[in-house]
Image 1 (tube, one colour):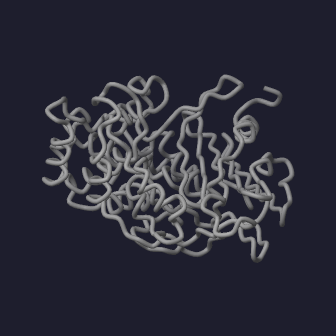
Image 2 (tube, helix red, strand yellow):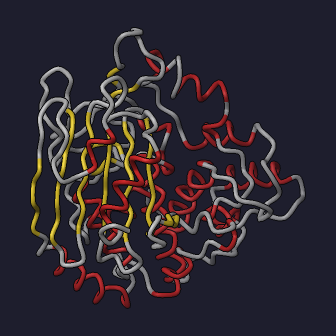
Length: 383
């Protein structure tokens, strides 16, 4: 559970979050949401639908949609629709690890191998070839140097590319994913440079199990999901389908037909694991990041560590990264991408203003469209 010192902050955050009033702005097929730039995220050929939920400093929320959730029926995206949140999983995993650090059940500068099952620890030692050990901190900050298993070309083709249709329902174990990663030389020695690696968070999932005796999913439910009442948030494991309600998820990569998007709603998310398997909703993501940034989930030293980007040269903390806006404000959050889904949640440093937005496609959206949306959410008028 959240540490004892964090519980009063958690209760205060919950009281504030339950007072949010939502204002809905919904459009139908091909429409653009009025008073919202979310329509810029939609593309007729590659991104069928998009949605945004923004919460201002007074607790009022605005939900906006554009395009459609389902090309077959034309229905719009709904506020409570579930979707795959990809690497936002990393923020949840980082919170659990930092709570364990606050409870002194591990130290961030411990060698990660000290908190891994024997087989994984031995594999990590062999991969290090006698060099300095990879620490828990380095796994959190993407400075471990470990090769990301998702960068393995055969694996990438099977799971994300042309082989997706054939392999989409296959299960992948953490040990097998780790073997894929460690078959490649490291990007760099531990601590030498930043390099985003899903392998780091795969290992952190193992660390959580080794330290607590429970899976990372069970600990995340106990420490984050249940206390914050994130009713639409789950770790699916090997479940192929999304919980209801949900729209569809589409991909333009690896198309089965040249003239159509591929429906990729059903898949086995075990290939993402602790690095990206989470399923959530826009209200749940807003609630989670508001509570986290507002100090409800971590004591101050751990929250400061989470936002310390020194090791990465300013690019990444621990499950959080900063985004510097044109109006010279900095907001904090994470994004997630997985087959058929893109999402990002960002909030002010105090968590009082938060925005989550998503598309039902894994096609990259134009940077200018995201910038316009974020300027509208966080910058003063005209800034």
